[in-house]
Amino acid sequence: MNRRSFAQLCITGACCVGSTGCGSKELPILPIGGNFRLTDHDGKLFELASLKGNAVLIFFGYTSCPDACPTTLSKLSSVYRKLGDEAKRVKTVYISVDPQRDTPDVLKADLSAFRIDSRGLTGSKEEIDNVVNLYGASYEIVPTPNSAAKYTVAHTTALYGLDRAGRTRILFRYEATVEEVVAGVKDLLAAS
Amino acid sequence: MNKFSFTTRFTKTALLIAVSLAPALLTAQSAAVTVQDAWARIPAPSKSDTAMFLVLENHSAQAKSVVAVSSTAAEKTEMHEMKMTESKSGMPGMEKQQMMRMSPVEKIAIPANGKATLAPGGLHIMIFGLKSKVAEGDKITVNLKLDDGSTIPVNATFRK
Image (tube, rainbow over all chains, first blue to last red; front, side):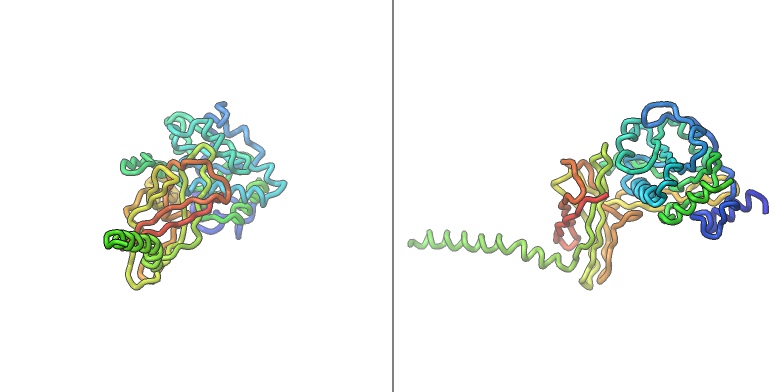
């Protein structure tokens, strides 16, 4: 089985929302992702490669999101708690697709509500779009003139699991449970 | 006691009784729809907007709808829905991702003898501009107006 067809199988199948039935040695290397640079929640230049040696969880969102993003962050809080000591080797990267509202200060304040080792990232629209494309994600600014929200941001909801070498190995679906993400993270830490 | 003062007193008494009975009558009218598990998410530290969730149960044989929501504790409240759709873009050889979309809705239907569940990942009430900071366990009252003219006051508890 070639790499692409195995990747396709794993994304549509159960093994990519967790480790069930997918031994750590068998985790595919998915044809998405890679190193990038953005601005972190301290206003400093951030490079993904600086997290090598850790399992990394990446997702795209925006802090004004009232539902999907806080749900994912709450889930990750539970994941970190369940991982115990292993959580020290897990970093979360939250990439804002709403740079107009999500300044570094806003990202820092809002991520502080969750007990996860996270970096909130922002940048220019062009910089963010490059990373969105690199990871096969997408988003869309949707004006809502009849709502106090003014606009919402439709965005993809996958959680990307990267191994210690920074390679994308698992795509967790939005519905993935805490237990599935915990199992997947253990596989990412063990993956060669 | 002259006739005029008796009439005035009688009218006042009748008004008092009517006013005191009104909430009971209103409750009786809206008892066809009951509310369970009402909660609101504590807003992110830099935000005063959040979402509220609950389950509405319609005990009558007539379908009903929530047509408006209001609260004196916030600048505005609206009914919204989150939906998952398939992303238009995608990487070759990979399944298309789910895309989260958020949009206002004009009403929330509660089927006859059925339920409407407002829960994360679906329908919810958006609370914009909370007028005070809230903590775990604090309450907010949001009034739901139904299409039968009744109003249901809902007390939701804030939690993470």
